[in-house]
Length: 234
Image (cartoon, rainbow, N blue to C red; front, side):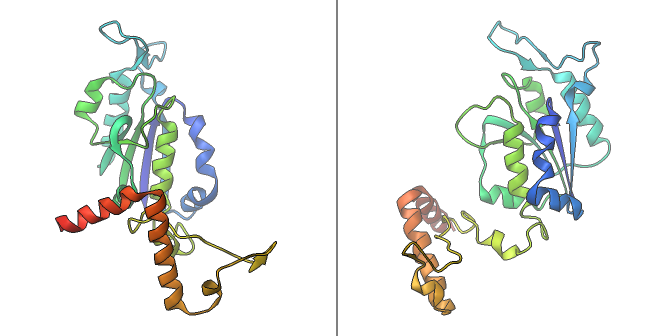
């Protein structure tokens, strides 16, 4: 079973997200244990403060080193973590291959950034991986942590009823997914492509590949360039 520890200033913000859909079922099946840690509980001052003004007089607030270090070290005393992740705007861009890799871990910890970020000493001495979900700034890292968790947990064996479905998702093969259709075969004169109704699996597979390539070329051409560069390197 995977264990995922999430360090946050707002655990209630995240808990509901983890009570629905595939993530909820994965927990009930015993595939993953998700534990939230309120960083306010690890502050040693009487006010439970977790942030303070930055040295140098810049605007905004910074998450203090002490409560975060206390929480991380307390968890490390109980188990070894494959990665301690910090959700940061300047981190490595999250991707499907990264989700695939993280899904093989046994213990993961995710620190949700907030305000102007965390005291740099946390990043220097505890964080093993910094991840961004896009080139934009959120109020806090909770949404980013939820995105990462969702992408990783759904890949755990047994999380999805049809495991082949996850393997056919967009980006797993470096392409976006082809168009999908379901019943009825005709609606308001709009027909499902005949090849999908033919029962000829070889032709269907070829159609899907052709559609995926065409859609990737039209909508995400940079993926084809990345794939080409990787092939050359190999």
